[in-house]
Image (cartoon, rainbow, N blue to C red):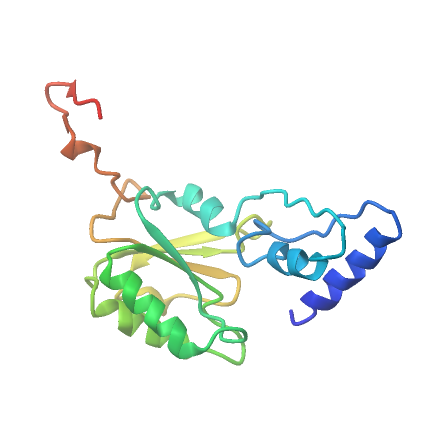
Length: 199
Protein backbone atom coordinates (compact mmCIF):
# COMPACT_ATOMS: atom_id res chain seq x y z
CA UNK A 1 0.00 0.00 0.00
CA UNK A 2 1.10 3.58 -0.76
CA UNK A 3 3.65 2.44 -3.39
CA UNK A 4 1.20 1.97 -6.24
CA UNK A 5 2.38 4.95 -8.30
CA UNK A 6 6.04 3.96 -7.92
CA UNK A 7 5.26 0.40 -9.00
CA UNK A 8 3.45 1.63 -12.09
CA UNK A 9 6.32 3.95 -13.01
CA UNK A 10 8.76 1.04 -12.73
CA UNK A 11 6.53 -1.06 -14.99
CA UNK A 12 6.33 1.76 -17.52
CA UNK A 13 10.12 2.07 -17.68
CA UNK A 14 10.45 -1.64 -18.42
CA UNK A 15 7.82 -1.35 -21.15
CA UNK A 16 9.61 1.66 -22.66
CA UNK A 17 12.72 -0.53 -22.92
CA UNK A 18 10.77 -2.70 -25.36
CA UNK A 19 9.79 -5.53 -23.05
CA UNK A 20 6.38 -7.02 -22.36
CA UNK A 21 5.57 -6.83 -18.66
CA UNK A 22 2.64 -7.84 -16.47
CA UNK A 23 1.59 -5.92 -13.37
CA UNK A 24 -0.19 -8.31 -11.02
CA UNK A 25 -3.16 -7.03 -9.04
CA UNK A 26 -5.27 -9.19 -6.73
CA UNK A 27 -8.93 -9.72 -7.58
CA UNK A 28 -10.02 -7.55 -10.51
CA UNK A 29 -7.47 -4.91 -11.49
CA UNK A 30 -10.28 -2.45 -12.22
CA UNK A 31 -11.93 -2.70 -8.79
CA UNK A 32 -9.69 -1.19 -6.09
CA UNK A 33 -6.80 -2.56 -8.16
CA UNK A 34 -3.92 -1.21 -10.23
CA UNK A 35 -5.61 -0.69 -13.61
CA UNK A 36 -6.62 2.94 -13.15
CA UNK A 37 -3.26 4.06 -11.77
CA UNK A 38 -1.37 2.21 -14.52
CA UNK A 39 -3.49 3.82 -17.23
CA UNK A 40 -2.93 7.28 -15.74
CA UNK A 41 0.83 6.78 -15.39
CA UNK A 42 1.11 5.49 -18.96
CA UNK A 43 -1.02 8.28 -20.42
CA UNK A 44 0.79 10.07 -23.25
CA UNK A 45 3.71 7.63 -23.23
CA UNK A 46 2.68 5.74 -26.34
CA UNK A 47 2.77 2.48 -24.37
CA UNK A 48 -0.27 0.23 -24.85
CA UNK A 49 -1.84 -1.04 -21.63
CA UNK A 50 -4.10 -4.08 -21.67
CA UNK A 51 -6.38 -4.58 -18.67
CA UNK A 52 -7.20 -8.25 -18.10
CA UNK A 53 -10.38 -8.81 -16.06
CA UNK A 54 -10.32 -10.89 -12.90
CA UNK A 55 -12.77 -11.91 -10.20
CA UNK A 56 -13.04 -9.50 -7.31
CA UNK A 57 -13.28 -11.02 -3.85
CA UNK A 58 -16.85 -9.86 -3.21
CA UNK A 59 -18.05 -11.80 -6.29
CA UNK A 60 -16.06 -14.91 -5.36
CA UNK A 61 -17.26 -14.64 -1.77
CA UNK A 62 -20.87 -14.20 -2.85
CA UNK A 63 -20.67 -17.47 -4.79
CA UNK A 64 -19.27 -19.18 -1.70
CA UNK A 65 -22.27 -18.25 0.48
CA UNK A 66 -25.02 -18.58 -2.14
CA UNK A 67 -26.46 -15.81 -4.30
CA UNK A 68 -26.65 -12.61 -2.21
CA UNK A 69 -25.87 -10.20 -5.08
CA UNK A 70 -28.67 -11.14 -7.47
CA UNK A 71 -30.06 -7.61 -7.48
CA UNK A 72 -28.64 -4.07 -7.32
CA UNK A 73 -25.55 -3.71 -5.17
CA UNK A 74 -22.89 -1.29 -3.99
CA UNK A 75 -19.23 -1.90 -3.17
CA UNK A 76 -17.79 0.58 -0.66
CA UNK A 77 -14.31 0.68 0.85
CA UNK A 78 -14.07 1.88 4.44
CA UNK A 79 -10.43 2.86 3.97
CA UNK A 80 -10.04 6.61 4.38
CA UNK A 81 -6.45 6.76 3.09
CA UNK A 82 -7.60 8.12 -0.28
CA UNK A 83 -11.23 9.08 0.42
CA UNK A 84 -12.50 11.37 3.18
CA UNK A 85 -14.50 9.54 5.85
CA UNK A 86 -17.41 11.97 5.53
CA UNK A 87 -17.71 11.02 1.85
CA UNK A 88 -17.63 7.32 2.73
CA UNK A 89 -20.37 7.79 5.33
CA UNK A 90 -22.56 9.55 2.78
CA UNK A 91 -22.11 6.67 0.34
CA UNK A 92 -23.08 4.12 3.00
CA UNK A 93 -26.13 6.18 3.91
CA UNK A 94 -27.28 6.59 0.30
CA UNK A 95 -26.74 2.91 -0.53
CA UNK A 96 -28.69 1.90 2.59
CA UNK A 97 -31.55 4.27 1.76
CA UNK A 98 -31.65 2.82 -1.75
CA UNK A 99 -31.99 -0.73 -0.36
CA UNK A 100 -28.83 -1.92 -2.09
CA UNK A 101 -26.98 -5.03 -1.01
CA UNK A 102 -23.70 -3.57 0.25
CA UNK A 103 -20.20 -5.04 0.26
CA UNK A 104 -17.87 -3.24 2.67
CA UNK A 105 -14.17 -3.63 1.89
CA UNK A 106 -11.33 -3.15 4.41
CA UNK A 107 -13.72 -2.76 7.37
CA UNK A 108 -10.93 -2.71 9.95
CA UNK A 109 -7.18 -2.32 10.27
CA UNK A 110 -4.95 -2.35 13.35
CA UNK A 111 -5.14 1.43 13.56
CA UNK A 112 -8.74 1.85 12.45
CA UNK A 113 -11.50 -0.06 14.25
CA UNK A 114 -14.33 2.42 14.87
CA UNK A 115 -15.47 3.03 11.31
CA UNK A 116 -17.19 -0.33 10.90
CA UNK A 117 -19.13 0.45 14.09
CA UNK A 118 -20.27 3.77 12.65
CA UNK A 119 -21.05 2.15 9.30
CA UNK A 120 -23.33 -0.34 11.05
CA UNK A 121 -25.12 2.49 12.87
CA UNK A 122 -25.74 4.25 9.55
CA UNK A 123 -27.09 1.10 7.91
CA UNK A 124 -29.39 0.38 10.86
CA UNK A 125 -31.17 3.67 10.16
CA UNK A 126 -32.49 2.16 6.94
CA UNK A 127 -32.15 -1.63 7.29
CA UNK A 128 -33.71 -4.04 9.77
CA UNK A 129 -31.48 -5.49 12.51
CA UNK A 130 -32.35 -8.95 11.14
CA UNK A 131 -30.92 -8.15 7.69
CA UNK A 132 -28.64 -11.06 6.71
CA UNK A 133 -24.89 -10.42 6.69
CA UNK A 134 -22.06 -12.59 5.39
CA UNK A 135 -18.57 -12.10 6.76
CA UNK A 136 -16.25 -13.23 3.97
CA UNK A 137 -12.68 -13.82 5.11
CA UNK A 138 -9.50 -14.37 3.07
CA UNK A 139 -11.50 -15.10 -0.08
CA UNK A 140 -9.47 -17.02 -2.66
CA UNK A 141 -6.80 -17.92 -0.13
CA UNK A 142 -6.04 -21.18 1.68
CA UNK A 143 -7.63 -19.92 4.92
CA UNK A 144 -10.88 -18.84 3.17
CA UNK A 145 -13.92 -19.01 5.45
CA UNK A 146 -17.19 -17.22 6.15
CA UNK A 147 -19.84 -16.57 8.79
CA UNK A 148 -23.54 -15.95 8.18
CA UNK A 149 -25.11 -13.61 10.72
CA UNK A 150 -27.22 -10.44 10.90
CA UNK A 151 -26.73 -6.70 10.80
CA UNK A 152 -27.50 -6.58 14.52
CA UNK A 153 -24.95 -9.23 15.50
CA UNK A 154 -22.07 -9.19 13.01
CA UNK A 155 -19.77 -7.09 15.20
CA UNK A 156 -19.65 -10.01 17.65
CA UNK A 157 -17.47 -11.91 15.18
CA UNK A 158 -13.86 -11.55 14.06
CA UNK A 159 -13.37 -8.82 11.45
CA UNK A 160 -10.11 -7.55 9.98
CA UNK A 161 -8.78 -5.95 6.80
CA UNK A 162 -9.13 -9.27 4.93
CA UNK A 163 -12.85 -9.47 5.73
CA UNK A 164 -15.63 -8.33 3.41
CA UNK A 165 -18.86 -7.45 5.20
CA UNK A 166 -21.64 -8.30 2.75
CA UNK A 167 -24.98 -6.87 3.87
CA UNK A 168 -28.19 -7.96 2.15
CA UNK A 169 -31.15 -5.88 1.05
CA UNK A 170 -34.69 -5.94 2.46
CA UNK A 171 -35.53 -9.15 0.56
CA UNK A 172 -32.36 -11.10 1.33
CA UNK A 173 -32.80 -14.26 3.39
CA UNK A 174 -30.80 -17.23 4.67
CA UNK A 175 -32.10 -20.76 4.15
CA UNK A 176 -30.38 -24.15 4.18
CA UNK A 177 -27.10 -22.43 4.93
CA UNK A 178 -27.26 -20.20 1.85
CA UNK A 179 -27.71 -16.43 1.63
CA UNK A 180 -30.04 -15.45 -1.20
CA UNK A 181 -31.28 -12.15 -2.59
CA UNK A 182 -34.28 -12.82 -4.87
CA UNK A 183 -34.03 -11.34 -8.34
CA UNK A 184 -37.78 -10.74 -8.50
CA UNK A 185 -38.83 -13.38 -11.01
CA UNK A 186 -41.75 -14.42 -8.81
CA UNK A 187 -43.34 -11.04 -9.54
CA UNK A 188 -43.22 -11.80 -13.25
CA UNK A 189 -44.43 -15.41 -13.19
CA UNK A 190 -46.95 -17.83 -11.75
CA UNK A 191 -44.75 -20.43 -10.07
CA UNK A 192 -47.57 -22.77 -9.04
CA UNK A 193 -49.02 -23.09 -12.53
CA UNK A 194 -45.62 -22.87 -14.27
CA UNK A 195 -46.98 -20.13 -16.54
CA UNK A 196 -44.04 -17.87 -17.16
CA UNK A 197 -44.35 -14.41 -18.58
CA UNK A 198 -41.76 -13.47 -21.19
CA UNK A 199 -40.36 -9.97 -20.93
